[in-house]
Image (cartoon, rainbow, N blue to C red; front, side, top):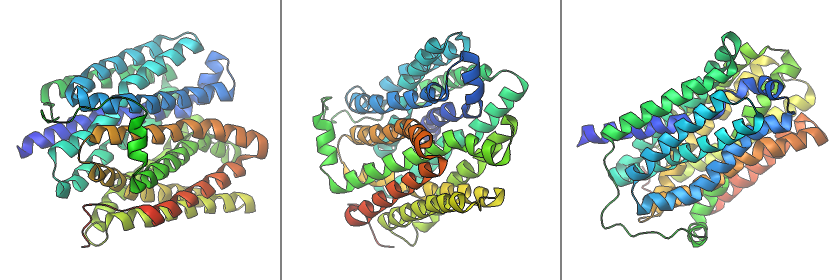
Length: 395
């Protein structure tokens, strides 16, 4: 049974890997994409934001669907849909066809991002969930580590569109593995869930869940602001070519992976709520440090790398613990709760690039990071006031 759990965990984690990998693999190529389709920066960024909008809306539907039909029955068709969307993007000769392919991709991969935590809640005990969630987050966040580097190299030595051939192959591989290894984990006596706006009200009425959701929104808003505006920052301050820019995503996302391991060690001495509270305030202060360095003209490359690394480490400490607390809060309808959480996280990811674009055009790049820092401070304050965990045991 232990080996079966590990195989299932590997499969759902690998499928979830494709979500952030799909978002970041062509992020260094956004200027080339705009030139190829002859669209402006806002429309180029829309291919990132629209993907996240679909993920958000899909979270609302897929969470309850997985609680009714089952995890396996929802995930496998979704991975095939994702593969089809990747192929559409690969062959697109027009911007709008490409945007349609991105929508199909997003509908498919949204299931992988939501079903993984629900499966972990199904097969692991509350005591084991923290470690399993850490593994899940580690594998899924390898996507942002590998994505920009792979995409930058593909754009430099082939054509940026070939990144979508790689995504199609990854979707097929994830489908084949999970078809073989993933057994249905939804209990036969589970309470069925109706899809509706009551789903939001029930989850948001819980003060702890609300604070986690607000934090998730703010942190994903910030993460995607970094994804979209880091190339602009590197080009304007350091005049780096596209082929090198992808490597600057590594400290950010490698820091997340390291932070996940750090967070697991902190659990031996700290409560989950304390980890989330401390890491959330640290992230806010880190972003405000970046804004202050830009304002003062102190932002040298070593300082930027350090800020990116710290942001990643603190985010990595927080994310698995957030998901673990959320699953702990709801005995039934775990996927529904994760779906609501995902809706607001991906809404933040969708709003970040577009809102950041308008803020940058109106008040400059520094204002993007100032507004982000203030938002993160408010979220950290809410976590400090409201967050609790029903399975919390002080070490």
